[in-house]
Length: 248
Ligand code: PGA
Image (cartoon, rainbow, N blue to C red; front, side, top):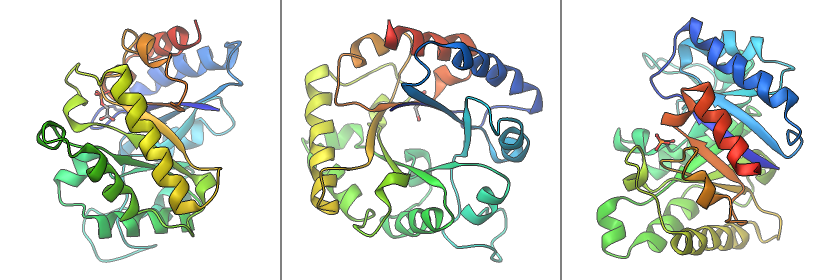
């Protein structure tokens, strides 16, 4: 199973459901639709209405983040994974670099992942190095650290997806070379195998400037289990073209 996940970030109003409807209709009729799952993470304001609307439809809905405490707490503006689960969402992104910038430490992220899994959400956990770290050849160490400080053997690997998103690639149009990406994905999978002690490990996706053009290169990389898509997920045409070009 491959994953195509659209991360809307701070985008969307109730009317934007039209974009997802078009994508849903495409997926429903696509001859390849057994091979992949399309997921969208709209902002919190749309989470309940979209989750309810797309229950039993082809695409699934998730949240972009959650708070690091369980159920309810006295934290203004915070939303827990329990609350996300209770409005019908199925997935949650944790550790996106936007949130790491805002102060999400490994310890906070571990708590977010643990509570989300406990509340039966599927977690899309993001990791990735920044430009400076890449220049200093620190990518492997950074990624190993980001994984091992958060992911525990006791976590349910079936409900965990990893997304490798090099920060320097997000929204920039710059993407890693094929060779670089294969090496990195292999390293991530090896690190996960070590943690879980099994051959079966979470799926590993790539994110960062994925569009209908760059997908033509990424599709050759068999090690990749799917994609986390930001900018190009805000247009039904762009998102559909990514899937079409992937299976072409
Ligand atoms: P991008 O964003 O596709 O616009 O580069 C990816 C992400 O931040 O998840």
